[in-house]
Image (cartoon, rainbow, N blue to C red; front, side, top):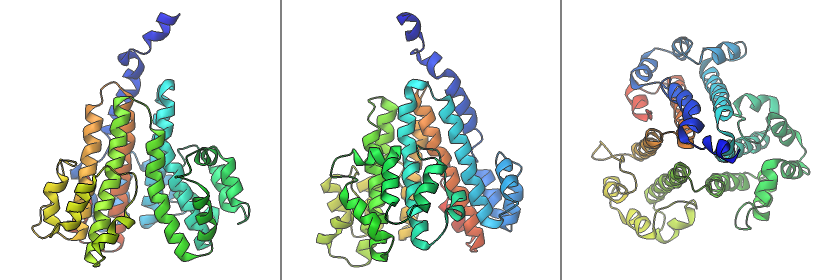
Length: 364
């Protein structure tokens, strides 16, 4: 029996079906030419008409009864991501489910962040529910209990969830009493709320990095990509601080923990005379990082950094052969499509020129 069980550890048997399914899904992700079509149409409604001819039709039709415009696009795309990710989890080999679930915990934390934001703004759970992408351990019922609990009990409700228990089991340097205290203050104080948002952003990366502890090569590649996501956010933070004239000695206080940039690189970015000067500094970490403009703006820098990270995700997907990496990589690429469609619909709503919209997209 032991030999029979070991047969299913042969990559072609273990991953053949799931990898083939996901490769097929990858073929449905929108290419540059279709994204260009979406950008060129005259309105969000025309964009929706085009999307209804694609794999987003079911979600668009179902939600169009109650929503319209860019809101319909945002909700339909989110619902499609939820449905696709759930399918991927179902075809994930059983022995690799802990790895997939570790990746999906990121959505738990993003949903929790959204719930806190909604409570702070006075929104009900019914108002925020369509925007949640429940693919992790927090069910819609869990999120509803958290959203509707009174201020005194909300933290106890979180602690009773699978995620809450795990958060509390982490080291004191992570989601500890300081974070719970920030939660309480954030519901009533705007300054504390802004601080909590920053803490959440930092903690998401630290928590996922800790959970993705498998020694498998694709998992370690995912960890490296997440660390690079922290790196590019820190680069953008540093440049904003430079633009505001913040003292160089204080800039490090604003950086998000969990990245991979060494101290020498951070110092070089702080001392760089202009944005173009950081290209050779970052290129060893981000081979695809490039700036087409001779005098790029901060927005152009952030877009270039986003694209460099997306290139890392695409490379990981294509390098993963008969492994869990193919499934994990596709989840990351699907998120990029979600972001692209949201950018286009919101851009159209606010009248952003086509050329600027096109430059903002991260094509995978």
